[in-house]
Length: 474
Ligand SMILES: Cc1cc2nc3c(=O)[nH]c(=O)nc-3n(C[C@H](O)[C@H](O)[C@H](O)COP(=O)(O)OP(=O)(O)OC[C@H]3O[C@@H](n4cnc5c(N)ncnc54)[C@H](O)[C@@H]3O)c2cc1C
Image 1: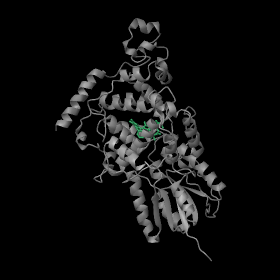
Image 2: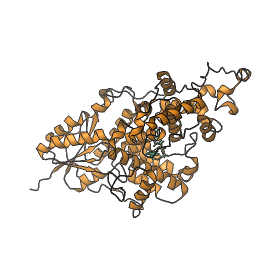
Image 3: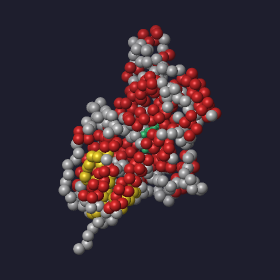
Image 4: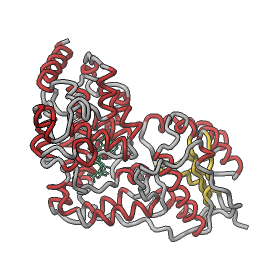
């Protein structure tokens, strides 16, 4: 009698059946496929908010995945614990011969996978990672000298050359479905994980691959306008796919297929963002020191003043700069922040409030539903000028000009800073310019209804330039 081997499909950042590389290869092998998802307590235990939106999003996505696998005759085992201990237990229980998973490029995940591989060597279990999260990975895009690119434009050129022959990825269809027969298991409850659903005021985001497909489908109708509308936060012009890409509830190859469907300016501009995504993954993979240090190490000499009350005003959206406050309140209320505002608020924290970019990076990591180490670190180091292909240090966003340019009529500000709704357009970007009489006319009291600016942009700009020059002169 022919005996089949047992393969374990370990779902991590690929919570879908559609076009899933590791799952496809596991099933194609013709062996018995067991499936597992581990709610990693080493990560969950670090989360302070019991109604964390991300845990809820993952949990709802895993329920969908479990149901979908069941529909195909398989079973997803959902476990809570430390994968370093749990995966070997599963391997031993089901006599697994090989583990398949999608590669993860974060240093902590690389270390985890290494340790698991080592502990499984005694069972002679094969461990196979598949590229799934990015379009091009690791050393697929290198300079002619064989080193990783550290500047985006040449990286993009090489990336495009490498992709020249691929206009569309063919979907990896699950034609073979020999999932292992095993007992049905209960889904872990959210409360068993130590969490509760997010409070009602938080927006509901459709999770799982259904959510991912809906989001992509809706964006298809808007992509033509992406290039000229993407910078205006009051328009729903961007895809909002970041959370689905983060947890793999959509396939990056399917996303690429849409971007590469046409050479319209909208499609091209959007493709460019997907290349930025790959670029930051590549930076994190090749230069893991960026997790704690500046990419350009000499910038670690910067002497930030790290004023705690400035930092708190920034986190609470009470800086007296309406565009900054609107961005921070969007983050606090929804778990999302528009890209233009991520740039404005990050620049403001570092260059107007003189606070270390790592403080802001951590705050975003805590609040963003789409938090992704590579993109978040890349974005912060870009804004702080410490990154690989960053904004030069002397280029400092003027929050007032940014506000006038990207939220001209104050529509976005009024949405998230309700106390400014009654303020006329001419003062919406800087209510502090209103005279006492004007404040009275609009029943508005500066300093009471809304804070006075906590710093002067002009003064802080000078101080910041001095700080950067002194650090770089060392
Ligand atoms: C300070 C700062 C922090 C950021 N933190 C994160 C983060 O934690 N997670 C995250 O996914 N993005 C982050 N970004 C990048 C960007 O702001 C978001 O990806 C984008 O706003 C998500 O909205 P969207 O899906 O509608 O984007 P779209 O404009 O529709 O872009 C499509 C996809 O491309 C990718 N992308 C777009 N812009 C970038 C970029 N600059 N760098 C890398 N990938 C990009 C995202 O996966 C995004 O979903 C950060 C940017 C800055 C300046």
